[in-house]
Figure 1 (cartoon, rainbow, N blue to C red):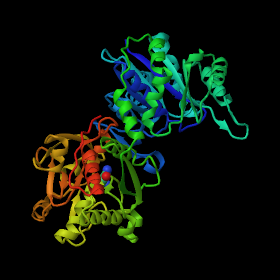
Figure 2: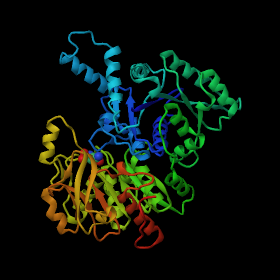
Figure 3: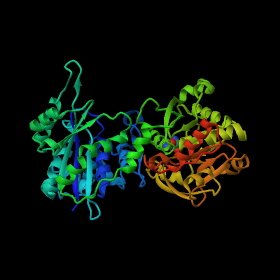
Figure 4: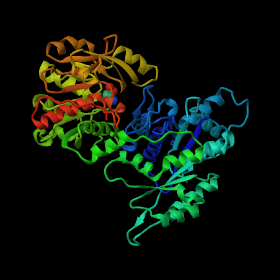
Length: 544
Ligand code: GLN
């Protein structure tokens, strides 16, 4: 029988509920349990695919092409839970299903209501993840208790124990205990109120995880337990971590959270093995080198807009026991500013994915700077497209070459929408998304990094390398290092004469883990470190 954990949040948003849920997943998986992760988002958008990175951070893409909340990135980095379109539901998607059912006459003329129709749909979205090979489903509820839009979700998870048995469900509530400087005290009242609000709805949390700047102390924990109707040991603290988010699961193991959950749910679990995570943290705390990487983008001031890129860079750094110092560069500034100044002292340059014209010329200048100064360059999605445009203009001599995304009437559309893509767009699908296979040239840097010539990576884009220019690029020395199995689509490019110039039409950052750096990121950081050390090659294992 699959058991269910529900993680809710109280007091304030941005408490790191995704990280906390993912970390709970880590420690239970490390006890040999098969875990599935899920996020319910109370906003009305059907999925985050259309939301601005400025508002909502990055859109996290799954193998099946689903565009999901960035918390699912934490789930994949922290656990091995397979994620699909069933791993992320929003209010919009739930209502869309119910409304479609209503239009199809499935409710036989009945009045369609929030309770039971919406709540039933939420319940089935949660219970869908249960199965014979699943010990535990961890469902994180976005938003904060007390939000109007969270209510149907809270009502649905209140009902689930009635359907499957209270002993099979565990409610974990994450709250904040703020420290008031003036009073020199930690304050527990907001937590008490937040739990009161949950209990009004009919949910008595089983475990409270308390976020706090400094140690909670036994006295406060006991007070919270008493006022919130909990056992003392069920008040678990999560003090801010000094070095890395990857410390959170280790902190939980120290507080005994894994054992508490196992006991409360009556699970059969093995001992907890966190050795590789301990090694990750050991490396985080003792970096041997500092590597400077410029990330040139247009959502630079928003920390979460390139979340998976930054994480993947950190993971690759750890593969070399190094700390990555990201220099975030606003692409528009490179349009006027001098690249020699703005990019001075960096060991590698990365241009990530993106949409729209703003900053494009700055990104192209960043590529040119990397290419002509032999600085390792890693282009991802749009970062590959600008590398193609730069080469067309400055090496092949195709003046004004561009992507039709930025100049519909360019004389040299080296990046454009291919016929097969046009069909997808016209059918209402918007992009080429999800996992696609790719074949690598045997002697490419990519094949060397992956250790294989057949890979599968995730895509999310409309535009492609224009096949009509293939011969010109080859003749000018660019290697089309990766293609679709039918050879029609160019998925990777490399410059053989350059120390490390590799770009991909896909998004490798979605498949990197702290204990298993992505091969391309690891290879890029290896090249950056080699440059830093003034040597030509360096290799390291990707795994820890
Ligand atoms: N805007 C480009 C396209 O649609 C690149 C997309 C991306 O970088 N994810 O093809």
